[in-house]
Image (tube, rainbow, N blue to C red; front, side, top):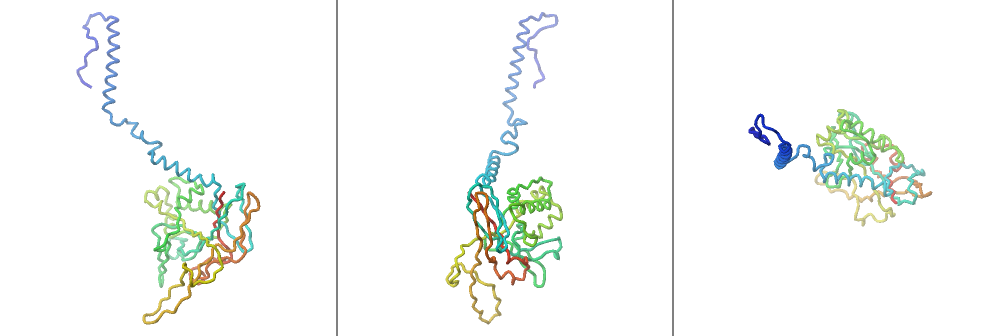
Length: 337
């Protein structure tokens, strides 16, 4: 604003101010104000408060659209009558699933395979163990875990040259509606997750059928919060591993002609000796001997009518397996209407 300010209507001391002068002053004031506003607006590139006017709740249109899509996708399973249920069956035992879908849903059954993992119950190497489990929480940095020893044990959590089995832990938290904030610790999150996961209609699994990795144990011990994990870039690198599998269980007849043969263990033969031929092994049928019945529009029964088919090689692997692994079947049951 200039320092040379002139009166709207020039008058000298002792001059008479008429009503016309007063009217002229009002008109000039309004014109001056309008002119100054127009000039100021023309000089503004970004209004102070409107700097985020192209966002809503701090989200850009693209982010907001994706958030809406994610919520819709999360709601679809409930709207379409889709359910994913985990059960444990012993031979001749029938479990009832109350789905309340008011219809005969399509039922798809998958066996949860056992796989080798390194489980940690403390932060020291002595508290780490190599064993077979059905479910496992781990970090991307643990695709291969080495346990010192003589000789050392190496376990491939994500075997090379194969598609990994893994689900983002954050997705599982959303699926089971686990509430958390930036200050929630990973330790509390894991406890809340397993509590929700093993609640009805799912069955409770034994502690030796699931575990977490050394990285997970270290973070839990340090009580790292969600905010810290996100800030370090670890939040999107935490996974749940499980291996649901299903085959069409035809009687096995000719293993030599099957194109999907699974070879036996590798034999280390001293140089200069011919390796003995190995008979190919048929893949283990899964899930086998599972009966599914519809009792009514709201109840499905699943029953194990024979001994489950888990690979006998698990017992000979050297790594611990749950003592009753060959007496019960662990299942993922999918329902859809």
